[in-house]
Image 1 (cartoon, protein in one colour):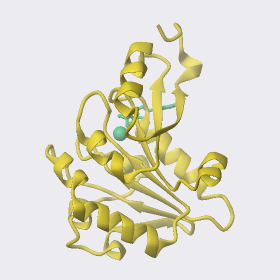
Image 2 (cartoon, rainbow, N blue to C red):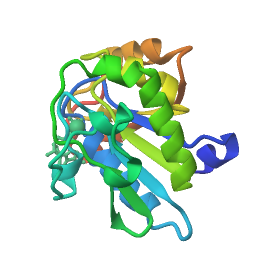
Image 3 (cartoon, protein in one colour):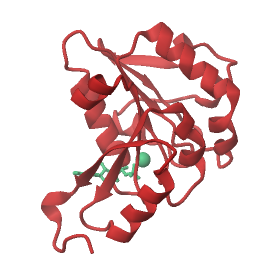
Image 4 (spheres, rainbow, N blue to C red):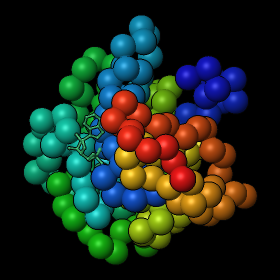
Length: 190
Ligand SMILES: Nc1ncnc2c1ncn2[C@@H]1O[C@H](COP(=O)(O)OP(=O)(O)O)[C@@H](O)[C@H]1O
Ligand SMILES: [Mg+2]
């Protein structure tokens, strides 16, 4: 949060080299933590159209598709839910294997600009698919200020992290690398 405030960053993509590293787990827990900061406003958006997971992680229902909000056909108020006073969530219940085009489009940029303005959010976290498996995250990078990369202490390799950093270089800022499942690591990153 200090880095975000110091640099004026509000929009953070959360992603990982591969599926299962804990992107959704971390994004949800981070959003819940940020929402405890008095006077703050946090938004968590499920932008993983390959394997949406935020609704399940929060034990909420997502009987709709976030694509209609991102394409500008549905208003923010009709898609964002508020499980806590300081937390709004954009849940997604529909798998879309061609979401890169939507995530890269002008209507998505406009919808998110409007959302940031009208919600007055301090921080927006975007749960995204794995960097090394799909183009969606690369397509979405113009919409964020920084990326938080989640590594899995039990499976992520140094080569995977290097490949992610190479892909992100020049496109966005790397806010940090989170070591998830650190306690269960039998063998360090190699
Ligand atoms: N640190 C952790 N402690 C306990 N369970 C975790 C942890 N990280 C991830 N999980 C669990 O592992 C599974 C995969 O994590 P998930 O966040 O869905 O991965 P991703 O979104 O990167 O595909 C989920 O069931 C999640 O609850
Ligand atoms: Mg996920």
